[in-house]
Length: 276
Image (cartoon, rainbow, N blue to C red):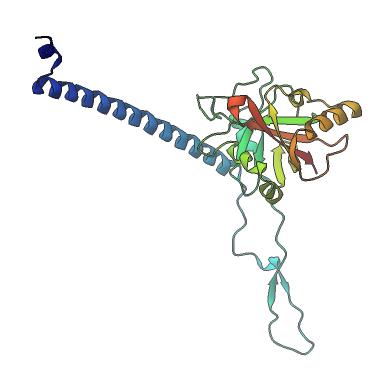
């Protein structure tokens, strides 16, 4: 008698299987919708940054240069043939035009770029709200990617400019900094550009370090004395994965790019560069 209660009829098994299949389908559809929304959100964030980059990019001159852009080649005496025209040397690269972004958002302080990488972003600064752009886009709306931002304790003339950015799984924001754990990548991308209202400055990478999020380097902002500068630099250099160039001397401004790295252990990756 008891055994008959334990056995399921074919109809009962079909019902259970149908319920299970329905629930599984519902879970899969829900997950698919969530993943789709996430991908669309990331794509929109990427496109928004691309639009900002277009706003600051200075258009190159026409590909049909004026005659004055050419230099005549020398012609032997008595030769009546028209001299061959040789293009003059390339014009220097023009700085970006940041004026529109300064108008759009008063929190915007500059543009960060590492040539030939995906790092090409605006930089924000909000001393009274240190992590305002941790999860907000340039327009102030919620964004998982946020916007790179300057440490709230920094001023643009501080001895150490610390800029934070997320290490996004889709390769955006500061994800490209992971390449700097390879010495060859570091040598291939030694220059970091940071342009502010005062102009575009170049910084040369001199070391890459892995630290904890509470490392003393994050307190080294002013570096106003030679003693403070040398002590802080020596300490962070001792944690460097490797060094590319010699450490800067006191008086040279340092640019620090910081992103999550081995976040399970509260790790951070630092790319340290000295102003040229």
